[in-house]
Length: 387
Image (cartoon, rainbow, N blue to C red):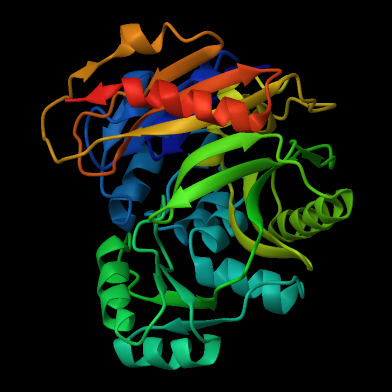
């Protein structure tokens, strides 16, 4: 296989692991983001700092490097340019359509609910406070509000009373990424648990699924995840069928993080990311024969995977910053954290902090129950301090 030049658009902690996986397969990676010293830049061969919402700047970087493959890893990109890049002969991962649709909650929700008739929560869109009030009336209390373009739960909140509507609108606008000032309001599903179903699509047409991952969120962002999530076989089949239909409609090869709510009566499609998922960092505990980043790298390069199998149980927990700081943080407690058996941690190397920013992830693995492993991962996280 010839060495490929890969342009990675987005250089956070997930992008960092993608770079490592690609380099282990002998590839050349240029990492792009809006700030210097982003995690993926620290391990890539080269890097660029641009505003990826600036279409001219994005075109300039593509023309400058003339990559074999373009890999988007964040939402704040002029994804409509990807269609042009495909016409020019560039490979976009998973595809221009997939990247364009899934970087915007509106497009992917309409595809699932309207085009594919997949079961979702009731929802409405709002471009103003007045439209949000109308959406809340349609969906009822409680309901969930999310910016159409955001990541890691930013701008997401639950409206429980009329008094919450204004606060939720303002919070959504603050958390919105890019220049899309629109939200989705959806009914609150009384779910028993939620899962991420990592779905691998490949050039050979074979779709594979990782064992389901359970997770817990706060402020719309994941705090712990565990694998496998125990669930009824019937509901797992429903989830796999929905994931296969959506990814097939979008096309292309790669790993997809497909999120579902699981209620007593069945499964509801929630969201989809055409790239490795934050909850999937649990696979860094070697719970599977390939972690999610290795699966993504192989799909990007057309290297077939014949099976994904669970090797052991695992759990992850996040380590968060507690305040804003514009200097590289000092991280302490690693010696104590390393003393717990069958655990590990990954420091992301982010150059600055802000409150609740994810700075590291801790891992626990073995034959213990996922509940025991999740607690162990949290215990490790509690020992690591971001100063």
